[in-house]
Every structure is written in C-alpha cells, then in structure tokens.
Amino acid sequence: MKNNILILFLFITALVFSQQKNQKELEREARENVREGNELYNKLKFKEAEIAYKKGLSKKPNYPTASYNLGNAIYQQDRNKEAVSQFELVEKTFNKKMSKAEAYHNMGNSFMKEKQYDKAVEAFKNSMRNNSKDDETRYNLAMAQELLKQQQQDNKDNKDNKKNNKDNKDDKNNKDKKGGDKERKNDKNKDKDKGKDKKDDKGDKKKEKKQNQKPRPNQLSPQQIKQLLEAMNNEENKTQKKLNAKKAKGKKIKQEKDW
Image 1 (spheres, rainbow, N blue to C red):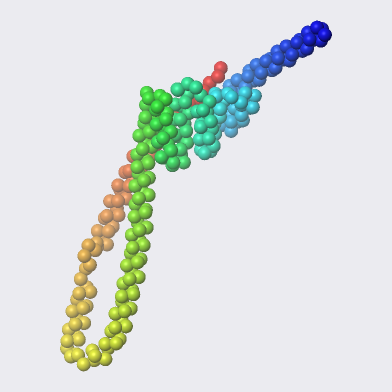
Image 2: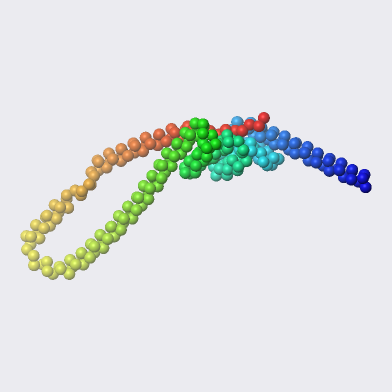
C-alpha cells in the first residue's frame, strides 16, 4: 500500500514538473514571437508583425506586451475599430499607470482617425489621468477638443440650414395658395372692373411696372455675391490649413519591447 502511494506521489510530482517546464517553454517562445513582431513592425511590415504577436498570445494569452503591440500593428493598418477594441482589452490587463496612459493615448488616436472626436477627447483625458506630464497627450487632447467643437458647429449649421429650407418651402406653398385665392377673387370681380377708365388702367400698369423694377431689400448684386463667396472660401482654406498643420503633430505609437 505504501509503495502504491509513493508511486502515485512520484507520478504527480513528475506531471507537475513537466507542466511547469512546458509553461516556461511556452513563455520563452511567446517572448521570441514578440521580439520577431517588433523587428517586423520596425520594418513597417505591420501585417506580418500582427501574425507574430498573435502567435505569442496563443502561447501566453495574458501577455500585456504582446496584446499592446498587437493593437499598434492593427492601428497601423487603419483598422481603427479593431484597434480600439484591442486597446480597451490592453488597458484592463495593464497594472502600471504609464502603460495604461499609453494604451489610452493610442486609443484616442484611433478615435481621431474615425472622426469620433467626442470619444477621442475622453480617451486622451483618461490618458492624462494616468500620466499628467505627457505633453503629446495634452496636445492631442487640445486638438481633439477643437475638432469636436468645429464638428458640433458644423452639425448645428447643417440642422439650421435644413430647417430654413423647410421654412422657405412652407412659405412658398403658402404664397402659392394665397395667389390662387387672389386669382379666383379677381375672376369674380372681373365684370366689375370692365367699367374702369382706360387711362387709369394704363397708369396703374405703368406704376406697377416701375415698382417691379425696384431692387428688393437686402438683395446683393452679382459682384457682391462673388466677392462674398471668395472671402468665405479664403477663410475656410485658412482654417483647413491650420487644422492640417495641427494633425501632423502630437501623434505617437510606442511599441513595448520584451528583450
């Protein structure tokens, strides 16, 4: 009986040792996969780097470095929604504030590329909460806030334009209706108007023609309209150049090394 217990104990010990050895071997291979991915990433081979990082994660699922670098490789391929999901997963696995800050920063960049400026602002704020000294994140936050403000203004202008177009259409329909009523009324009174003096009729027509020739209030001449459009275009080009210059700054994608 004692011999059987001893044999069982030795078997369990050998099994545990074997599992630990296999686990260490898998972790070593996972680190090699990450190093391979980093080399490919630095050569701008982002698709190949993505594959290498995924191999590392298959051997060590809870591997924050591989997970974070995978998010960057996906981001570089403009698959922004996937990148956001990956960075959200990474943020939950990181324990250090600096690492969390970098994950949120890159998450914000992904939202920026999707023009989801409200979400980008929140991501950059979360990054600043974990690392308040990061000037690049602070710059990106300011840029995201400015773009969000402009986006909200554009949406408001579009909404106002649609409302004005609807109101103008309703006004036109009302005028057409009133005009039709007037015509019907004029038809009923047509016989009464036959007895009017021809001279007065001629004078009324002449007066009406003269009134019709008068310019309407606030009506711009073609030259004034052209000048106004040119001024608006120049102002819009200045704003766009300013925003493009800002977009060229403040973006960082930092790879985590595991040497």
